[in-house]
Image 1 (cartoon, rainbow, N blue to C red):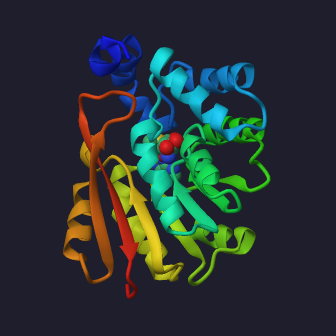
Image 2: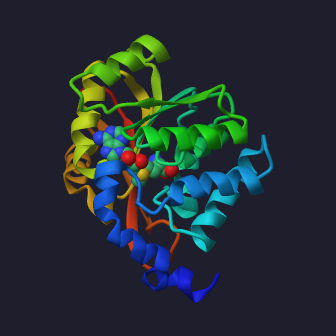
Image 3: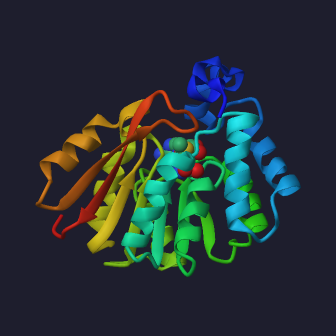
Length: 252
Ligand SMILES: C[S@@+](CC[C@H](N)C(=O)[O-])C[C@H]1O[C@@H](n2cnc3c(N)ncnc32)[C@H](O)[C@@H]1O
């Protein structure tokens, strides 16, 4: 792996991302078309119907072409292990982006249904294209919306995707960092988690979700049993980041 991968700030596509930081919060994209380019690259270069090759091709695009804000290969391995540990039959992801995280969940749980909630329609379209190419679109879907919309999206998940009390095995939180805790609380209020469900949360250090981390520390051994996994930010080995893996113990 070259020096530019170790020192991400030397990569133009990372600097360009810093310029696009405001775009990400308003449109869900970095603003230079790289997300659509990633889907084109996958369709052109990855073997159809092969989730392993699609995931590897997205990682290659992020390392060699343009940096992407997927969970990435290093932290993705932590997600894979949590999906397996939860014995996942039904998973919910918050924040779809290009569909990479949901595809990793689907690969780690080959019989599971995976539903991902995304604010930006353009990202949903990119993710669906990638899932179709990987051959998982019969069991991976995107709902355009947000948990913070007063219950509309959660109602849709219940009515159209079979979410209900105790149904959710794996929750992957990876969207608006300031909404991690409030959205978790909304899902707890619905009673969708069961003892043994696992909640994985990315980017605890960068950009950072301190309120969520404090909540999990306060709930340690009560509502949740949490492991703090130290790792690095996506697609580089310099900046530290952290993934929280929290097993639901019950209550709420
Ligand atoms: C870090 S990316 C998700 C990466 C993805 N989980 C993966 O690993 O491939 C964050 C995504 O969350 C979306 N987003 C931001 N705020 C959101 C919200 N309140 N509800 C749903 N999606 C949101 C953004 O549009 C963006 O696509």
